[in-house]
Image 1 (cartoon, rainbow, N blue to C red):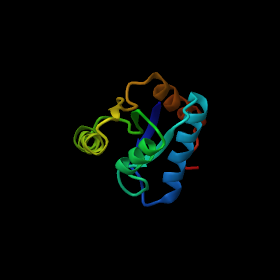
Image 2 (cartoon, rainbow, N blue to C red; image 1 turned 120 degrees about the vertical axis):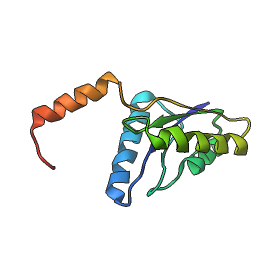
Image 3 (cartoon, rainbow, N blue to C red; image 1 turned 180 degrees about the vertical axis):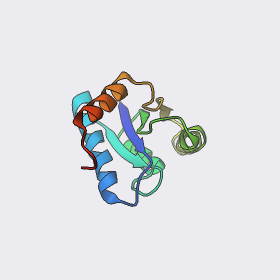
Image 4 (cartoon, rainbow, N blue to C red; image 1 turned 60 degrees about the vertical axis):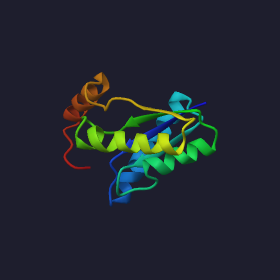
Length: 123
């Protein structure tokens, strides 16, 4: 079974982490993901390795990590490959791969244009 992890940077502000969890839950609902987790690089729990272990324990055969990052910066170029390697070593029968970040997705441009139309400053 394919499982999904929405992987974000994480924050010491728990409401920010909760917002990411809400996005992941809605993506799971719309995408029909039976198995999913939200994971954080730092500042939130679980981390990526913990989330993958949870999904493996629930029967995942493959995990798709979806970075909730705008661009492929240092965290996706350095940290994510190291974390994926750790997961693969801990769960050798588990196929693990990551998608590209959000940058370049047409929905991102639409979101930006929508915010410009809102003209709302700070919630």
